[in-house]
Length: 92
Length: 318
Image 1 (cartoon, rainbow over the protein chains, first blue to last red):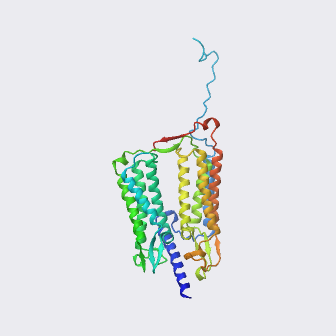
Image 2: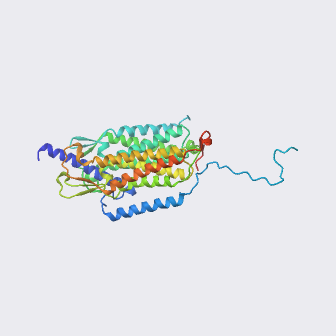
Image 3: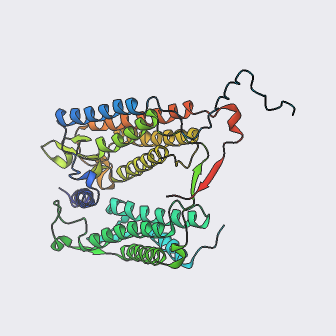
């Protein structure tokens, strides 16, 4: 390997190692990314995660599917006038 | 515009120093300067996040639109600043060049020198932390109530908002946590196939997507509590646009892999790079969030008679 190729390799590998260790250390701060190495390519964990997301989506439609918009003024129907009752504008 | 306390000006000054610092070199490795942005990408992102939180906190307080009480604002900016400062101190003691494993100890520093740029970053973080915490415990902060911007019309929770939140979580979880994003063959002549997650291989993209996820989930939770800062239609458009930008960024990284340009060279020896299921599921999550946001917006047209009176309100946050 020539000197320049070795230098390129060193810098590239150092940078990549930098990224690797950087990610690993930051994972201690972000619990959700614990592990961070992305080594789960097996079908079962992905299928389980997908099933959990799908179940959550179905639950959301079940929970909020029929909800009315909040704080939108609703028209309250006026009570029907009883037979014989005085109208508000009736003269005294 | 209200009078801004001197301590908040100090926080803003520290934030500017933080932003400048990430453009500087942090290390010298065997005589070669190494920049912050690519040398310690997640640390750089954390410094930028601290600066953005500080500037937004100062800006909203100056405009009289602070979403939380003064003390909470100060504590929040201070907490993010402490996180950034701690990460910078750690990276000064243990530079990223030196060992593959996490936890190599202080002996892994090797022949890496810390440059002035990193000290400037630490100084910026320290100024933000000191200014924000002094402000948090000041009389001014104690007497500053929340004045959150809350839209006059609220949609409440809808299944489309729920799907948008769910999709935004998926767009981070699948590509950037424990699932594999790429498998790489022949990287630097390696004979084994290496699995890579997005958190390590595309660090700035992972930070961007994490930020987008946090914003979308925050907006959905605010809408569910009836305290959204945007009207229902604007909320849907905002969420849809954010998710669409996230989808574009993920798609770019599915098409343009980071491995063949490692080390800043376009001639890095690398074999086949395969995008795994995690990447496609992340893209699907982002697209789901985008579609759900825009559908929510389309369903939330204000009735004709209410459009003229639908304004915004400024209410004290709980």
